[in-house]
Length: 433
Image (cartoon, rainbow, N blue to C red; front, side, top):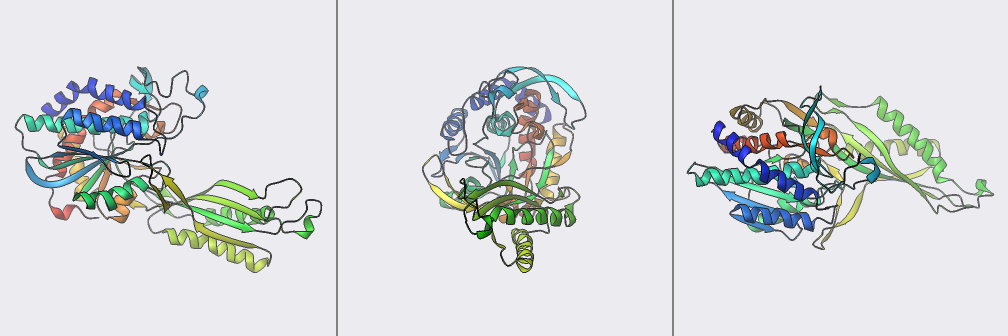
């Protein structure tokens, strides 16, 4: 099987590279993913997936049935990408050009640079390179089925909307709305978020915290008649930084908890008037053992302490939520938060994925994302196992050096299928976290 998979992967290299290029050339900012969704749907139809459809939220789903009963494994990508930023930073490349050339790339462990063939462009590393591979890994399974090989279980590709804004709306609606309505179940997930062909097994949680500090307006010429909300905010900001630095928690694999002030503004925000409101948004990352509630409580304790010392200090803290509208026209508001999660290397799901890589003679290495993913829904909320496996490299995500190695894409074709075949050998007890 190793030789067959590697041979098929090489055979389909031109097609998967071409598909990745077409995906990259199609802009797909969050809430504007229709064009790239159409490309995914058309490609799965062309390749012969057994069922292909779009749900009402704009997510795309493709299903390949095995020849024998077995677990259903979801291979997941997201459809959207971040903004290109300033074109002048792209070293002469068109962010939507999908140019191919030989370029220097980090090796798997980021210990050296290697000259290799790459595809340039926005989302090459997050996640169109990996999404293209997941689609064509399905094609390899279809070829194996045509050749008479036994295929257990069900291969499900999903491409979800609105991943980048971080509320996980697309994934939430996929597994909590669409799947139950369509009678679809899944047992575990392989994400194509960037992993450098390693198995990624977790990431920190995230919650976006909004703090509103209140004051009283007055004329700018007589500030003593008002209470300047921004001045009050500076005390709060300093205390947050000091408290977080002193009380950081850490996980041996996922790293340290952190907090970053990302947005600050005041109102009325006009000349000659003391501001009566200062709004601050924090990006709070947390490790297992911390929760959304504990993150909120930590800031509330600081507010309480400042209020006790200063009767003019007034503030509130809440988890931020923003209405999001899908390209299909549906609007939903969900809180901006992700659970922390981590899968042990010895977990049967992770061990089976590792065996899959061994079967195609790929080194088994492990990693953990710095950023968050939609797998928080899968592992944190639905308590199902997941791993990340992808040809893309986290180092290039969201940057004007966005690119993916085509040699890694070929490896990912074979790796995805081999992982699937090992995962579908597992019994039901392996699909719990």
